[in-house]
Length: 625
Image 1 (tube, rainbow, N blue to C red):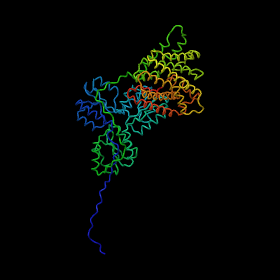
Image 2 (tube, rainbow, N blue to C red; image 1 turned 90 degrees about the vertical axis):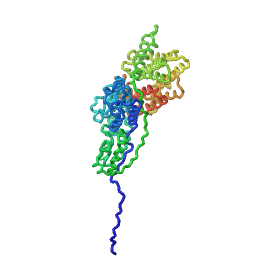
Image 3 (spheres, rainbow, N blue to C red; image 1 turned 180 degrees about the vertical axis):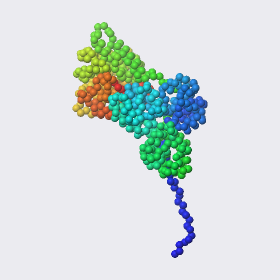
Image 4 (cartoon, helix red, strand yellow; image 1 turned 60 degrees about the horizontal axis):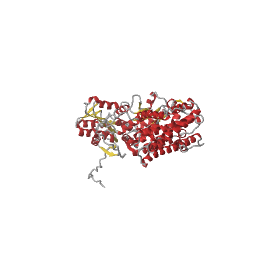
């Protein structure tokens, strides 16, 4: 057969793009960035142009230029802003000195700091007040790090970025530390740093939840999930942006051979794109959608097919920035200030209660004063006053109840230090009472303080309602009897042969927790408190008592006797079981952290009014003495 010479038409297969672009999800603006930008926009609408912004509101030149066109004026320092003008502080957070400088110029201050940065500021301040040195994991010179350092006095915080930085710190291994993390730091690098810190130092506190911004974490996870599949990863963002640079690092660490930061479509590396088969694309949390759209359009012109990758859905929303001018918070009212006032007032109350009545034995009175006045944390007394204030009670009445509790607490310590009990020579940094006087005087002084506590509670000055006074006396008796302090002390002296953690916690909830519970219960009796609120407060107290004793156990293991004010290592020498010996130091710290969280949860129903109690919970879990 002769083959046909008729030509057959060419069959053209559908055109297939040689390059695929995987769009990471999520990407671009986070809630904090959006909130800060909207703050400038709303300020312009409300106050009119110009409004002044210290530093870049967020690290993206495209965003800054758009706001400049609307009437925002960006400056580097406060002294560049005319007196009386509207001044907006950036989302990265500002040092307290910046706020003071703004107030000195009578500026109307609007703080657009991200709430997640504010969380870090609150954490480090709480740790500083508790006596811990803070390690800030971050990049020296980054605006967020500069602002965070500016929350505390110079030297209170050390910035570390990599494990090798720890070698340059002149800090003892048993020094009490805490760590915080720059919100835009790499998750992987932060985990490595935290592990190195915990390896080198024995007493380390950390945030209850990660400091790294949810958006930073989500964007790093998203690009990490696709980077290994790609020949090229493009990160849309500004060179000023820390989280943009971290995304480039994460993509490289995840296995992409070529990861680059680009500012927009005009920066697209054409040669690298044309040589790649699969390209990953993401955007920093400060990068607007318009920049991503511009890059995508440039990629389509290079014959790229763009596909959305699955990823986390972000539903986080923050309250809008208030346009009401801020005032610098007064340091008055801090835990340190309240404690300083309370110590003076408690000492005055105790001095009056012990008295100088003729005919009384002067040696006994002096021993009682030695045990109670001029020392101690006054934690329980402060707890009474804080709870009383929360429910509308009288400070003077709470002060008397606090003094009664201090009498009982001092009595328990005096007897606890005796040779027949713990046989201690030091208490609160000075000789124990039986060493200063003698054992018989110590026993009698303890007995007299116990009696004085009930005398104070029963007097009309403590509360005009006899029913309330009777309840205060009854609850006190129960807190120090068989089911309270005395019972717990007996369990401590004669423990089970093989105690379980729950046995230890039962002992500690009586030995230490009973008086803390009483302080909270007594405070609630001094004002108007519903049964539901009292139950919340008791739940708070139960968890707080355990936190307090677990921290005591930890200090016995790792504390400095000069700071703690008494001998340490007693549990180990006596073979006594404690939370630390049963759970280990790290396990005890983890348990304390869980209990602290439970304290805060119990206070949720009270809102901001419970801030002093929250501060006391933070103190209990971080205290150094």
